[in-house]
Amino acid sequence: MDTANSSAANPLREWALYAAGMGWHVFPLRPGTKIPTGHAEARCPGTGRCADGHQTPEKRATTDTAVIGDAWDRAPFNIGIATGPSGLVVIDCDMPKDGEDGPTGANRLEWLAGECGGPLPDTYTVTTPSGGIHRYYLAPPGSRLPSTKGKVCRLVDTRAWGGYVVGPGSVTEQGAYDLTDDRDPVELPGWLVQAIAESPSPAISAPVQIRSVAPSTYGSVALANECGRVRAAQPEQHNAVLSSAAYTIGRKVGAGLIDHATARADLITAAAHMVTASCDCTDREIARVVDAGLAAGARNPVAHRKDAA
Ligand SMILES: [Zn+2]
Image (cartoon, rainbow, N blue to C red):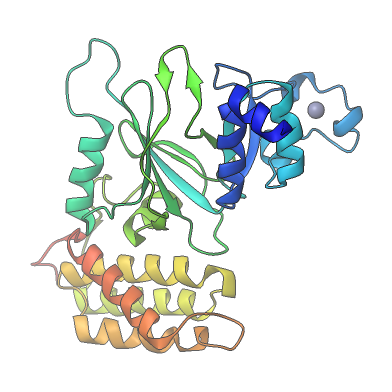
């Protein structure tokens, strides 16, 4: 009865419980806003829930339905989803600022996907009151990808560790956060893992200029280095490391510095240790990640002087 009453009075409570049901860690945002409840870290009193250190929204966020139900019984809070602990990387595509022309963040991301090995897979999607788009992807298991601002490309931010998104069902003065695609979030594409993890993104940085080194020597050294990184990868980093190594090598394959068959065979051999009882990597999955990374990298080849010695 209580539940029925409070859900009728407070649909946000149902949205908060729904998000927790998806396995996402939620926390309350002040009603009608995008601002977390509670005090900012700079004003932390160091008492109560912060007695052992300031509790950031990311730390406070929970999937505990009893805690969430109690909190949302108190007020129609908007829903904050702490992306890091939820295992999510949300790609946040903005609209150009007022009075600015040019492509939207979504246009830019689509273009970049085409350059880097797209298309961008369809996934769980929420539209924001300003016309922006939040695409929810699964973080590679065990990775700790950061939140970024404009790093993937202009008008495209990422919300992962250290960040949060305003969840579907939330409402501000500007409008609602609408769920427009409710399929389960799919895995973050390897090229986006790469773009977020490394600085600056190779896809948007100036081409690397390689001078006066015999291409074959340079290529084989690079391949050996990346294979070393793959061999040393910790279980929770398997996917992210293999994907970024394949992408890095793929860029050199694309530039003609490394033979494709050699690169593929060496990467797969280096990754053989990843197939263990304690990990869900399989031979097939490893080959898939290597092929996808090589293909994506080859579409964005490093620049080099073909006539170098
Ligand atoms: Zn505090």
